[in-house]
Image (tube, rainbow, N blue to C red; front, side, top):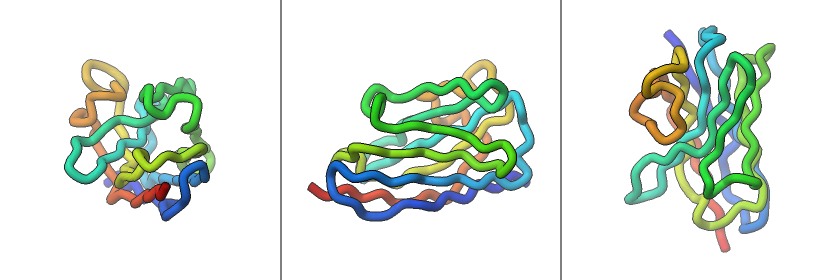
Length: 128
């Protein structure tokens, strides 16, 4: 059973930075993807960033492009989300998600229903 465990959330002032980590246990799909999805109170889940495990290709939501960076460390089976220039509107629960393979609706940043595995989430709060 694949397990995803997030860490690194917290409270920060606007303009600050945080780095989230997602440790993946028993995730060995080298043609899949891992992503960060967030959900603010009263809003639907939103794909933030995705990385393809095969070649490291990355894609971002327009709202975070240029501020967030997703990366992976295969040796540690961990994915990171470096978040810079944080804004109050970035406040949300951030989830790590993963899919077994790219194709169809899988590994499309916006199609959050198609991920196979989810972590429990880590809260990010940005104050103005």
